[in-house]
Image: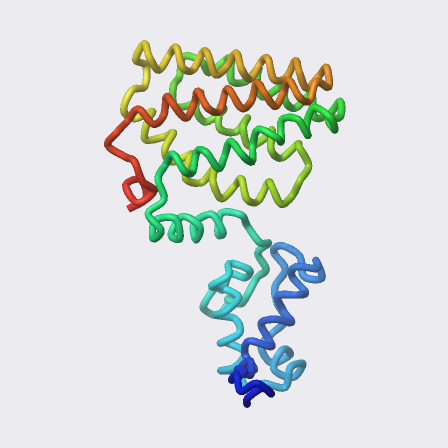
Length: 252
């Protein structure tokens, strides 16, 4: 088929159309997490397609991590909700291919995450504040365990973005965090427990405590300034390991 200007238009395959309809039901919540899809015979009748076409549609959705398929007598397709880590892994591949540096990734995190501190301070609820304080208290107990502490540290950063309430920023930040979390773990392996590591952890912890105070006081501009400085200091510390300078060095 060609359009009026002579550009060839590809007609979607029937399997793609079936996948699109099932995808829409999952996204809209008509099919919930863990739900089994109807039997193949029922779906073949509903969409008026053959078994090979239906199974091709299943493969499309499975590749998108929207369903999981168990083979065998008790097998079948079950719904999985869209997960940010799928996009994060693909984004990592794209960044590897483009030769992105780790500094580029850290800079992007600062651009996205620092304003979230202001949004959180402006919008926070008492429940949000309680979650932040609980996270800080938990991290303080883990100060002498570098691996556990860095996990709590990373979870606090994710919590700040989550509680800011912007779903787009949450997804985009999650894609960047997938890479930064790996960089953090690599750094822990290199210098866990060293004086420099201890100083960096304690300085970072103080920034977390101060942020909670600013969020409690609803001081959005001050919260953003503090968080930007904290992120820039973390970037400087983590990029001192010159053995890894690109995303490919880290993920490859």
